[in-house]
Structures are given as structure tokens and as C-alpha cells.
Image (cartoon, rainbow, N blue to C red; front, side, top):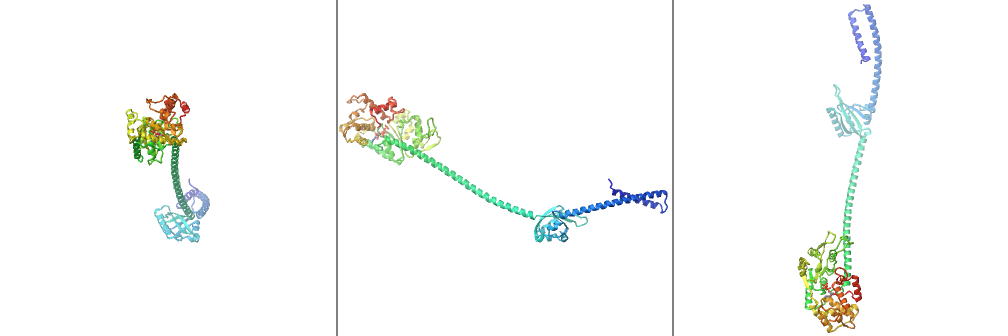
Length: 573
Ligand SMILES: Nc1ncnc2c1ncn2[C@@H]1O[C@H](COP(=O)(O)OP(=O)(O)OP(=O)(O)O)[C@@H](O)[C@H]1O
């Protein structure tokens, strides 16, 4: 839409054109009525035009005022902007600067104009950067930034952050508009922040180091503690094992002590027994397995103890296992031990005889009675020295010397399939056969005197004489129960003898061998019962109860047998 100004200028041009046409067409002073009218119209239009011009003039003044006002505002904005504005010529001379920029450099605007900007740059490096900055701005015609140190009011150092753009002016050298922000505080803050950050890094590094060291120390301490806990547990387990062993040994030795009181005394001078002594001397210091063979009561147990007490193992116990008296169902756990709950009734953990004998000797009496399945386990212990407790997968290693004894003919047992041949050869490393008493009757007087002295002491008797007849009778008997039988006869004789001479006839005769009834008096039934019970008890090693106990063999209740024993005054030998 055309403005008033546009309209009026076109109208003025038109009027002028008309006027000039008229003037060319007619000389002055000759005016037709038509011309008159025309002139009046023109006059009117001129007036109108004049009014219009006046109005336009007023409008122009208004616009000019507005322009001035806006320029003043702009100047104010320019001057008081938070950023210093500079206009440089291509040489870096200040051509214009706002108030903020002047204040930044600590001067007044008028003093700054036409001054080279580098005179406010603090150092040579900054000056080089600024020159380069100007050149690049002009070359690239893009906005570029740089940061330099400026000298402000009273020589204060200001961190000036410059942002410049080149402005091309037609036919002129052009200029560079630069805004400068005082980055001193920011720079300081940044520097402080960096310093604080660096300090923090150092502190974090130190603390991390401390924590790592503390952690390592803690880990070491935990490891140490774990190790000492483990070794404590080991020590505790060892102590417990030793305690168990000591307790078990103690119980066992107490039992042994109550059963055996002639420990180690072997009496005999006969060639037969001397040869046994010789063999014992030979083998005792070795670790070799010994197999003692001989009838019941010949002294296999005594010999076994002698071998042990003359060996390097004498300070460790000799553990005796009577394979006859082992309860069949418990024999394995007796020998090798058991874990708690290994079978119904196994309420507690129990150490086996082999473990008890570790470092010492195990005496396997009546080995011929050992059940076959146990024989194979025994074979393994002899071969490898190791076994497992019942109910435990852990293999236990032991160092045990084995002395086995048998009154059975083991070779016959092998033939009958009751004894393992391989086990026999393992046991038969160093066999010693102990002769029966009837084959060494010359030892009988020595043994009789030895037992009289023993029972005198025990019973407070003073028997010191044995008639020739008595001794001859004793030597004449064939002693199926061997030394044990002789010992029992002497004991009873010491009890019953009056005075200082040993009287054994009545009792002794009852032990004559079966079938040898010549000269034997007819005995009362009660005496026969007495003797039979005694014999069976001796046979079972004074074991009353159980499968192989005397009560079972006699077909009696254990309590009935005990009552009979009380009745006949039969005491354990
Ligand atoms: N030479 C001996 N000197 C002294 N006492 C002996 C002698 N031989 C055996 N005895 C005694 O005879 C008894 C029986 O001995 P021992 O138990 O050693 O015989 P054993 O052969 O092992 O018998 P069994 O085969 O029945 O087990 C024991 O009291 C023992 O002290």
C-alpha cells in the first residue's frame, strides 16, 4: 500500500509536469477561461500539496525525533552493555569503544580512541596472540575467539576474553568489531576450582592409597587369622585326638593291668623254651611281623608282651585283640573304629584298636578265629598300613607292628577255607612255636615255685615247700591247658594248703586227661561241675557272656553261671 509520502511525491511530480507543459504551450498573460479554471484547480492542488508537505514535514520531524531517541537508547545500550565493545581498524587501533570497554581498560573513551590496542596488552605473548587474532579474523571472515592478559586500571591484570568479527566497508579498509569480557574472576575461579580439584585428586589418591593399604593389611590380617584359626583347629583336633587316644589307652591299660599282673615274667630253662627265648631276642628289636604258634596257655601272650617290651616301640602301648572274644557284628568297628551313626547303635565316634596301637604293637590273639571278610581288611592294613573307619571315607594311615598268635593249625585252616592263604604268608614272616608244657617238664618245678611265690605274695601265705611226690605228679601230668592250667592249679593249692607245704593232690587229680582214669578217684558230681565250669571259663578267657562266652558253651544263662561260680567259690584267675 502506498504511503502518504509516496503519494505526495508522485502528485508533486505530476503537477510539475503539467505546469511545465502549460508554460511551453502558451505565453504568459494570455489565459483562456479554461486555463483560468485550470489554474484555479492547480492553485487548489498546490495548496493541498503544501498542506500535505507540511504534514509530511511534521511526520518527518517525529520520525527524526524517534530516530534520535532510538539512537540515544542504542548508544546507552552500547555504552552500558555488560561487555566491552571495541571497533578496531585493520591495524588494531581503537576506533570506537563503549563505556564498559573503556572502564575495563581503566580509561575514558575519548582517551582511548585512536590508541593501538596492543598498548593495553600485558605481555609480549598476548600481543602476538592479538596480532594473529586480527589477521585471522580478517582472513577468514568468521567470528573468532582468543584470550589475552590486559592491563587495566592501576595496572591490574585483566583476563580479557575476546570475540571478534571483521566488517567490510565498501571502498574502505573495513574494521573489526570485538567484544571483550573480563574473565579474570572466572579465570581465578577456574584456577581455584582446578587447584581444589587437584587437591581433591591428591587427597582422593592419598585416601585411596591409605584405603588400599588398609584393605591389604586387613586382608593379610584376615588371612593370618584364618591361618591361625585353621592351625588352632588342627592343633585342637590333634589335642582332641591325643586326648581320645590317651583316654582310650588309659582305659585299655587299666583293663589290661587288672587282667594281667605277671607282665613280662617268662620262666623256663628247658632247651625248648630257651630256643623260644633266642627267637624272641632275635626278632624283638626288628619291626618284623611275628606269628606265635602254640597250644592254649603256653604263654603266647607273655611272649608277645616280651617282644613288645624289648622293641623300640616299648614306650607306646601294645594293644591286644582277642579275635575269639570279638563280637562278630562289632569286630570290624572294634578293629578299625567307627564314626558316629555308622550303624544303628553307634552313638559315638570310637577309635579302633589299630588306631590305638599306632606307633606301638597290636597283638592279634587267636587270629585263626578271625572272620574271613575281616581277614581281607587286615591284609590291607598289613600291606599298606591304612584302613578306613566304619562310616568314614577318610583313609587312616598307621604304623603298627603286628604280632599274631594262634593255637590252631593255620595251614589246616587254609585247607578248610577258613583262613586266607595270602594273610597267612603275610603273618608268617617270623614264626615262633611255643612248645606245650608236657614237652618241657623240666620247667615245671621253676614254674611251680614262681607261682607259689606269686600267690604267697598275693594271698599273704608262706608256702615254701613242695614234696617230691607232688612235684613228680605235677611233672607227670600232660597239661592240656599248659602253663595257664598249672598256674591255676598252684593258685588253688596255695589257697587250700595248710602249713608251709603245697598240697595239690585232690585238686590236681581232677585235671588228669580224659581217658586217663587209672588211679583216679571217683569224684562227686559237684566237683565235676566245679571243674568243668572252671575249665570252660579258662577256655573262654573268663568271658561269661556272648556267643563264645562260657555261659553259652555251658548252655546256661549268664546269671545262672554267675550264681554257680559264687556257689563253688570260683574266682577269676
Ligand atoms: N613261661 C612262662 N612263665 C611264667 N608264666 C607263664 C609262662 N607261660 C605262660 N605263663 C602264664 O600262663 C598264663 C597263660 O599264658 P598266656 O595267656 O600267655 O598263654 P596263651 O598261649 O596266650 O594262651 P591262649 O592261647 O589261651 O591265649 C598267663 O597267666 C601267663 O602269665
